[in-house]
Image 1 (cartoon, rainbow, N blue to C red):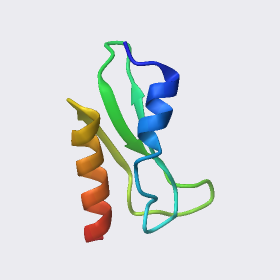
Image 2: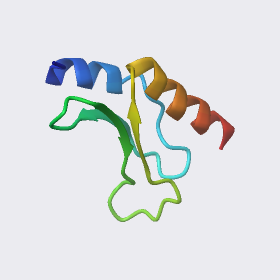
Image 3: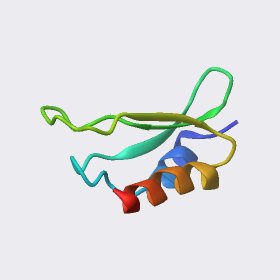
Image 4: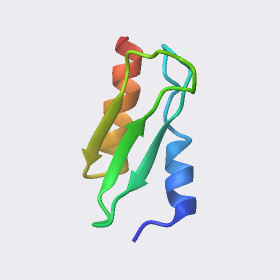
Length: 71
């Protein structure tokens, strides 16, 4: 349902983590659900480990970008 290019393009709209400068990204599971996930950069101890199911890309962007601004 979602192409790799579409997921990559939507992932570029996500802000970097304010703690480790790591990236968040959109991925899908076998059921084609959108998942927003953040894994810290290798070797960095980051307090933010995040994974959330999203109904839309806008919802995921809102979860991550607004949360990052509040940190």
